[in-house]
Every structure is written in C-alpha cells, then in structure tokens.
Amino acid sequence: MNIPTQFTDDSHYQNTIIKHSRRLVGYFNYGTDSQRMDFGSLQHRNKNGFADCSSLVWLVMKQAGYNVGQTAFSTPEMENDAKNAHQYFRQIHAKNVKPGDIVIVNVGTGYGPNGHTAIIDGSYHGKKTQIIEIGGIDPMGAVHRSTIAQSFQSLLKEGRITYAHPTK
Image (cartoon, rainbow, N blue to C red):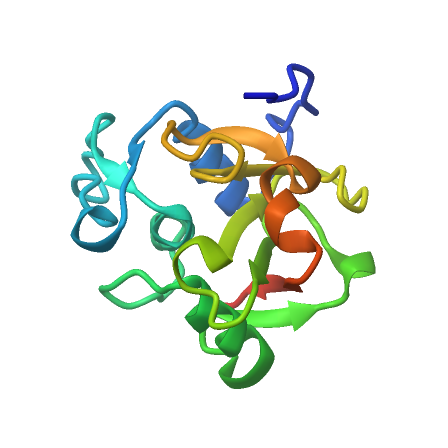
C-alpha cells in the first residue's frame, strides 16, 4: 500500500464536515451491503464497526447536522442527487472545491467497485487534493487520509468525476 505520509494540517478548518471526519480517522473496517451501516450509533460509534465510502460520507454529514435521512446513500445516488435533485448535494466546478466538499467518481452504474466517494480535506490541487475516505487505496482498512490520484486511480480513466457541495 502506497499511502503518502505528509498531509496538510486540517485542524484549523472550521468546516463541520472536516471536524467530524477528522475524528473518524482510524475508525471502522470496510464493509459493504448489510455491514455498511454497522458503525454504532451517531453518539457512540464502534471503532471496530463497519462502513463503506458512501456510508462514511452519510455518517459525517449526519453528525454535522445535515438532513440526510435514516439510510446511507450510494455513490450513484450521490452523483444523481448532485446533478439533479439537490436534496443532499449540489454539483460544483472543480475550481470551487473547498474543504468539506465531496468527490464522487462513477464508472457505468457506479455500484460496487465501479464507484467511490471521499471528503475533500484541503485546498483543491487537482488529483493531488487531500481526502478523507474509507476504501480506495486501502480497500479493507480504516478511515484514512489519501489523495484523489491514489484512491481513485482505477476509476479516473473512464469515470465521471463529480464534485459536490453538501446542502442543508
């Protein structure tokens, strides 16, 4: 696994999504299907529980006070919402990406290994932009920091890249 060791210090960001996601670094195992929401309660997370990339984004948004319903969304649902309904996300141009925004990359239907999402955790620097995620470069590991290039590498060639701002 080739995870970068130097990351931008995100402790000064006032964004609530960054604050909540930063606290989850080192938490959870990667889990799909019925396991993807087995992370404990909002107030008492189980460090050894499970999440996938989109349920992590859902959990962080829920903890930050966003109205995201009771069930985690999937990456195809996230992309569709950002581009159309705007219930949870609003699509933004890459030049407007800020810490706390979301990156979604889908190939085809976007389900399973054909989709991935992460939380932007720094200033936008193209594919070198720092993210917080689960899955991606460390497919079975805990929530961690990485970059778009490293974690989305297999999807970037053919995938649809969507940057989105969470909506309250």
